[in-house]
Amino acid sequence: MEQKQKTKPARQQKRDRSHLVFMMIAAVVLLYIGRSFLGIFSAAPETTPAMRVTVNDSFTADGWFVRDEITIKGGGESVKHIVYSGERVQKNAPLAVVYGDDEALELSRQLDPLDDRISQLDTALQTANDSSDTAKIDQQITLAIQNLAAETKEGSGSVLTSSSASLRTLSLRRAADQLDSASIRAERDSLSAQRDSLQQSLSGRTAELKAPCSGYFSEIVDGFEDTLKPASLSGLTVARFRELTSKAPETRHSSSTLGKMVQGFSWYLACEIPAKQAERLQIGQELKVNFTQASLTSPVTVYAVNWEHDDDTALLVLEGTDFNSGMVSMRQQPVEIIIASYTGLSVPKSALRVEEWTDSNGEKHKDTGVFILSGSVRKFKVINKLYETDDSYIVEQSATDSDMLVEQDQVIVRGTDLKDNTVVKT
Image 1 (cartoon, rainbow, N blue to C red):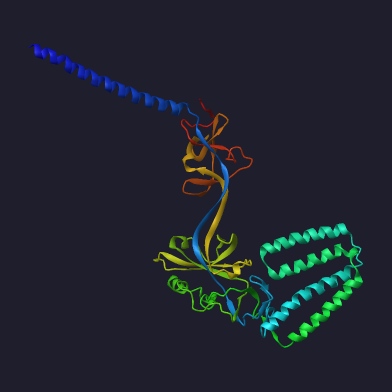
Image 2: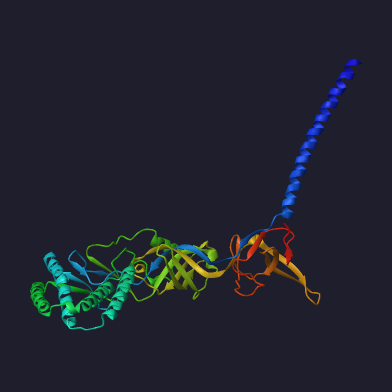
């Protein structure tokens, strides 16, 4: 009897401790929940500024240039180029001079500085008595230097030569009052005699290589000139395209090849694309192509879309006319094909809200828009979607309409009790 009386208080103590632990856990949970609700109802809404962006509706591909190209034979070590890669030339225009042997080539190299110096002296003689306004000449020199810098960036060799000569002439005109005509004429006559002697030694030992057609000249020959032809593009299949581009042709640039002419002034770009993208395109559609490695964007037109509707891929052919000096020598390039570009304000998808309202006739309407925080006031603004990305919408931008979203509006992306024209309670 005494033993039962001793064990009963021990069990009661165990139950009391369990109850105490349970109450403590419950208190902690309630405290956490309370703080969470307090934070929700008292914290200011989370916002992000409406930023102006430009987004492309585009996809990427591996593009191959296809052009009418004519390989020019007759190169070698004893050849001096007259034009450079990327330059546009007319039919029968001289491309290079071929010398009969190394000695003839060396003689021609001696002629170049003589011709250059004689040209300078001729200019000096013409400007010796020039009394032009020096201030005006200084302005022309500054402009010529700027033009030369721009042409250097473009990389056109013959244009650079012409601009350099123009700058040299202006410099001589600037120094006209310091020139001694008699000394200039004597030096000019001496150099002219040396030039005549060299030209006589070269007589019959040179030949010109001329352009077989009008177009663009390129020194690069990659072997695809005879396999990738525009004439075959309209019926070219994906399988045949893979076959043509899977391995490099055996024909390569050799010492007997000067380069090639890109005939005409149009080019084609062929690329294998997913079928889902091909379904969005049609012949004659105007697009843009961004050559990502060349920092060049060019307008193009869809020339052909070759595919079978049960295939996963299609062959897209684009036609363009924009050229630059680097493009003429390109063959394979990663590209971004731009179907459309959208400029507007970027709005996170999490910020979108649908507001219902009733007009004077009792009819209900729904508007899609966002809430913004203007000071401490929440306002609803209707939006017009232009384009959808994975996590945001590009919406129409307004510069003046206060009822529409404007740049730098603070868009509410997270908040509670969102109502139009209400004050945020803190």
